[in-house]
Image 1: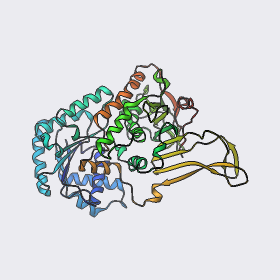
Image 2 (image 1 turned 180 degrees about the horizontal axis):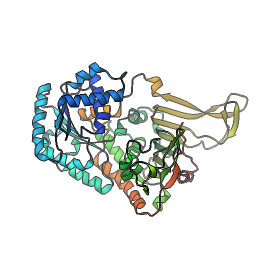
Image 3 (image 1 turned 45 degrees about the vertical axis):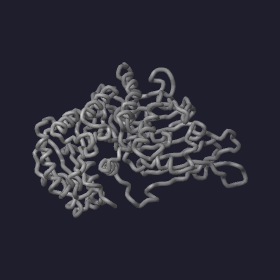
Image 4 (image 1 turned 180 degrees about the vertical axis):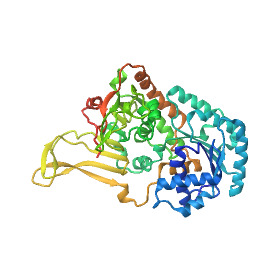
Length: 508
């Protein structure tokens, strides 16, 4: 393994949960694997006064608690801690950035970073501080001239706006002083190993890719299910966001792009993102008419999740007791292009569903003639059933896997077929621990690889599609359809898919 070139990493919002829960553990792991050069200072930046040692101790305790005693390597931490520093800064005060610049230069000299080392500014802050941060960097001349633009990379965490207008306003704020190539809009879902494997699986094998089109595919389901509710006082944020903004507009649509895009001419950032953009440009409602014909919103009521009682959404902490915020979204959409014309895509995401799970289920068309009877067995009990279509399942999380369901002859004197599954699980085949999403994404930022990050035109295209749905819901006097916690959503979502004679998968 080789370390990256010298890079200074500034984490704005270092007192926040994201820093201690995701960013510092990811950088620590990269240091352990020798992907992070010891000449790369990592500087936590926040408003509160704190010494370097206080920050190191605070991060050590939180990382150790997160990893557990058996996973925490104290010796490796001591090595990593030597490049961990802290700088006090009021992000809204442009005058303090000159001091930040001086301190960073001193730290770079202290750890032996090269004079041409790049800088990464990770904005792990609330969206309202992004403009102040960019203005402060500009005022202190920490943003290099255009010919040296690769020496600064700015990472922005979602949410990237609340609708199309606010997303466009955010783009204007960022582009006022930064080039698009310097902006890394991070969606941690794209850092998951199995999400990246979608492209490798499709374009690295000659078996399935020729079949992924309107001639062979009946429909595709994409599910991002969460069993959790509003733990950790998350209700305050979620009640202003909801399932559409929190998950479907970003995670789900990105998965749609990866499974539906055409092969890029080169496996490089620009070409891959161009193909994803074409998918979003072709995205349409799955049927004509009002939003309710193709987009369903739901909200969970009290129920049981994993046999444990769960509150109704409106009873959760920091949630308006009269809230109409959606905790579940299901959509039937279509792609108006040559490859996918006529193939329905069913998207769903929700809170308080039966299990935590993300998967893409590709259902093939049945053979044109049903020549054989189909048998399904439960133990020793077998029954004749309708023909079962072939399915290819890509499970993103948990227990990352790929499964293919097909039919084979059942042993015996009759010509009967029985559906069987061929399963590949990462955990069974690879002993290497899959890297955390933030490990991969931070490493890509250090390498200057923007493949797994969202471009501004992608972002706006996604918002352009979902904003009319949000507007329709928020102007409506009707409430979301209700579903008990621990179920797969409201019955209206079943009607949405049953119109095509399909059914939602109940993932195992």
